[in-house]
Image 1 (tube, rainbow, N blue to C red):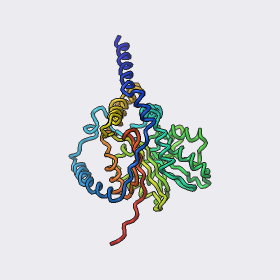
Image 2 (tube, helix red, strand yellow):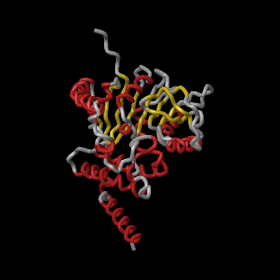
Image 3 (tube, rainbow, N blue to C red):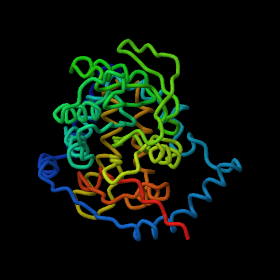
Image 4 (tube, rainbow, N blue to C red):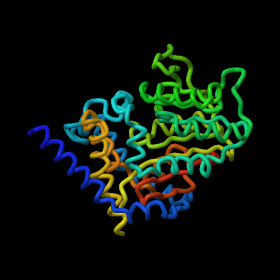
Length: 348
């Protein structure tokens, strides 16, 4: 009776979860025209100056031991290592499928927009895909580069280098790369976006190599990162690494796709907000048979705590990545940040 009751309760909750996203809202999301906000250096400088003080205060609190612990910040159900590669190892087996459910199938459209409209790939470009996960963006970029003439390099330098801290995500990505015939064009390695100086190669069985030299200074033309920056503990450090490895030229680009909490007052923005806070963790719980409930609780709360779009763009600008535009999808639930290395400031 207990098991039957539990199944009935779970079925009812699932019906409620999908019932709060009626067909009309799903159609509206599919028909929505993305909203593009153009930014200039003056706007980012003003917002950056306003946002620097609170961040500095938070850093000071953390160094003094006054900052709240991860568990206090994200809830006691979240295990140690939240947002880490180890956390994603636990949910890698359902990651691709739950992404499709949680995004109503639009996650690939958002990624394609990043690659096709933001990155502006050119023949000979070398791409760095951070938080590559199971390599969806890496493969999209490889498709475009192959159409532009990219081939497997004779010196072992791939056109697309995907980096992620999760071995389980990466080995699934390696299988995709091999199935699609992109060996030599795409290479996936284990590494940390906060320190790209050392990486470890991985194969489809999950076997890791010894650490090797990572990404060299000024060696990358385009950088992508999809739904990963909010899981980086020190985002400023990651931005500095992006700036270090990026070539200082007009065509260099950084394209970051990330969730955030909609703050609009329109009905559809409120529905999108409810979907993130109620449906996303529930889908994760169902998909993982409750084994990943804590991990998906963290993912939901990490969205709640992510900065507002212009504030996030200002934090990039403070580290030398000037954001020219923010494209908003799904009524403010997803944003695409298009950035380039800031021009050197003239000496006084």
